[in-house]
Image: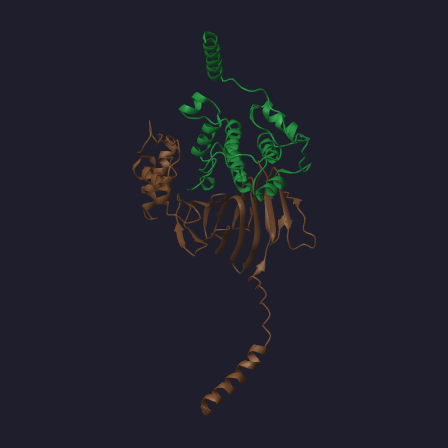
Length: 182
Length: 269
């Protein structure tokens, strides 16, 4: 009886330490790391191709973010693309990475928030770049329209968010005409 | 009874040739009046491509400064890109990054210049000048058409629909349900052509204390009265520029156009 109590106490303590220290899993494997995208695709061509898609997958989304931040994407596959963004700190290595999986709104918000180095509010500053507060911050600043975080991103929404982020990086603000009007 | 019979026979005789008649061929779209002219590409930066849709084998080609663009040309830009198009001596269109626009009409009839473009996505900064003659410039988006003779404005089409931000002189907008409304400098609107004084409060940040989402009526309430449920406050303080723009949306545009000097005083306040 006493032994059981001791074990459960240690288990509770371990769980508490894990929770407080932000116990994380290691980097997850990248699914579809070899998935290619059209090679030598110009930025204008990429934007036009993606705009008509119902949902944007992670492979296209990562290419879009790389084009936004580096003006080029010479990665050979999804794995290399994801690795570049992980190395830059744009994508956390704890995300479930799959080339064909649709990118979610909160994930896109998180990437853009880090990409444009947006300063957040109190909770965003306290908790860091969590999906939740990145989405709220991006909605607040007019990068993304209001909506749920776990829904997939449509092509037109993705292109609009990239256009706003691009304008923000170039001019320091989003043009009034491009801001969501709800 | 005999009269009735005659009426039926005459009606049948009259309707026969008409029903047997072949349907007239669909009328070909009338060519726009006037002489076609070309738009000149004044400058290009980043990735931009064009396609002449009336060519035998339409294909995308890079846009270069100095290119002459015909009617029915489509242009698309990528990220970190910009294309400036000159419309003879009557103004220019600046295509921002991630934009696709088609030129439907470029006509000159005497002194009158007509231009019609279609914006599929992205943003165009239009600047139309009437110093050298009358203009009829139209920008069509999937949800609304904007017409102007002399003005400057930014027109965008994105996932939320159309966005119009007028910068100089009035713009007349017609949306898909044939609602017509005119917007003045400083005003913004969407594809429902929502009046600026209804839209402006909603553009403020009212989501900060929002944990589980707000209903549209709650959002409207917060927009109108600025308070609501939440531990802290919903409305963050506006910075100086936002405050000024809100002030200008609320007050400055109520003034008639002749009172530009009053606008200056209010802006400086």
